[in-house]
Image (tube, rainbow, N blue to C red; front, side, top):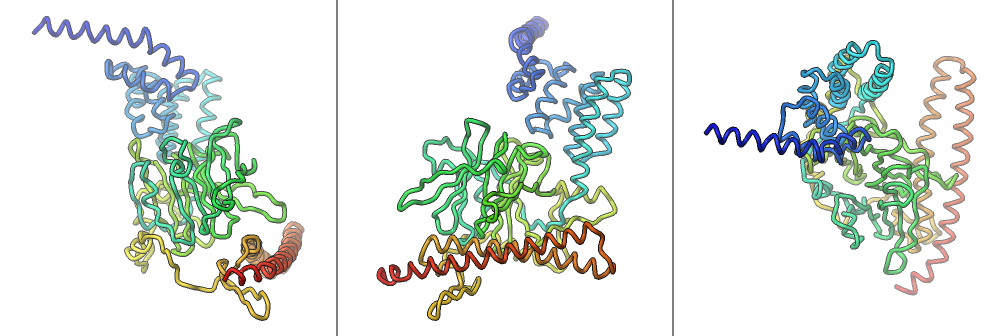
Length: 478
């Protein structure tokens, strides 16, 4: 028995020497270069041979943290910090910030500061970590008061099964279902209600993944166009979803000052400038220090979905179903711990309000697609003495339909402008006087509203004339 124990010790030492001498040094170099994903499997293999090596726990913990496996990283960093590796306390502070444990993060930073109180370079580095954590804390304190009615944990490859869109909201599909030459993955494309326009991401030679759009021409798709640089940054953009107006697009990005991994953004096409507006980053809890993506809002059902891998095991994510707010409303709470829980989505029941039947809402959200939606007038557009259109489907010409969909989008923008203008006018009326900035803002809004109104009327006439030209062809086909 004694000989067997000696033999086992020799074999273990030999394995550890091999890892350190041949691959562990390489992994350390990758670690120092920031290539954490490359170094991680080597560190994991070395850890199985020697789990008590303090520096190895430090390298492994940081590599797990930097590759998104935050929950697995904590024990390794605690072990390293407890074995007198001060660098571990710096990354523990970063980790606690990502877990919304901001008091614990500051305590870890104070330990690091104490250990490096005479090292100017280390203290400057500490300030960068503190600022990143402070930014997360500021964002957490501006958490949106959104009602989350359901959550479902799924493997990443199957996560679209949680999205039950109505017919009017189009279709979400795995990207490889459309592009047969692509390997199976969890990236997606969005096909509009009519099935003649799709949005998707693909790898770009200049950067990571960028967003593209394509139109249906006769029986096949073509006319591929890359979306502008206001959307496509230097890093990955993916998971697009376009609202019914054809102008508002949600997407996920690792660019645009992402909090960590993919974050959710929204932008809108501006017809006046023929370009997209600067994307707005959504508030917490939609975003987090983890990967958050695939925002979809079904206006017919009055619900939305988004996916996140926060606090999930590797290979899984959680799809949340929520009730979209007509306008952004933040959580109002004097106790920061409550707001942090809402940012983290510690409990979906904590987001609920009295008197709401969430069971029925969940049932409605899970219903399959409505293939024949109940008729309802969306608008009233007088074409001529004989024809009055009430839905986009009433248009017989594709171009006229596209033009009028732009009209609907501009009308929505105009209503929002009018609401903002009314608020500022009421502010002037209540105060009895207006400062220069407020008066200037009102004047600009009035000019913008007038411009939008003229654009709407011009496009309505253009759509009317185009549709009237198509009517004889349509009647002949009938």
